[in-house]
Image (cartoon, rainbow, N blue to C red; front, side, top):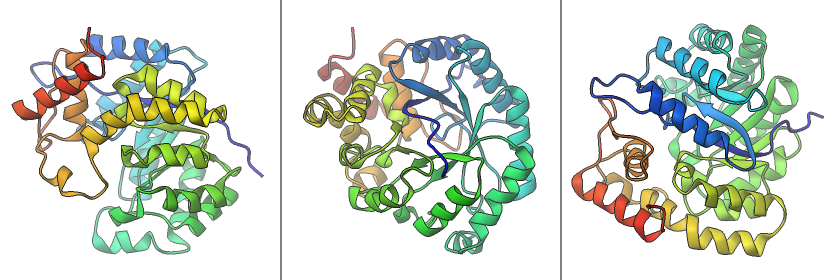
Length: 320
């Protein structure tokens, strides 16, 4: 049986843009250097969902990988997201990422192109065959990007188990579940077959998921108050659950709740700024970025949303 390869904290690297909406490489390097100092770091995730993967060109994605590989210690794996709607495009993106220096590919679902493709996710064979074919083409470690079932774009636990057991290259999974009850089904079936990293839709349910069991956590929101999140992960992995719970409730849950609210609530629908934009506003307030720009069709935060983020960080004592 395959043993987990990763344990700890996977950090998502957000991408700063300058006034021309081009990558601000100096600020990106500075962020990577800050990330590299994080306790328990076991991987840095570039070209993530909050890392602008949908707005970047293939050349820009490669450039970010090259910068990350040149900036980070060799001991820290660079994990790159890849997207596409067919095997050819996904394999091409994977090979480009590999050439640029990525150590692991995080594979976004290739079934999001049409309603028919989404139905293929419920198949017993389509996801398994896809990962077998992709592994054969790229010949490198793979991580599954799993959406929560409520999103209408999720692999079944049975299929995930088959992928983990039959595709040797699949070594990890970002296990997005909106509730601890759903996550328990994933953990109880897949634990030991691959490294499981919780994200919980970046909601307060992440606390319960870490208590159930995990190999670590990865979520873009952890860029805000990084030390608190990494301490929470370390305490959870060390079995110090009371301390982990107290830290999470005091330092982490208010941030998750402010940015996300309850899963599938109207809170998110009534917000204009995207998750990426709001996290960037936080990084601007903390002096990491000089701009919270996002590329269209994504939307930036309103003045009210920006003030809300700054007020939250001030209350959490994250601003100097």
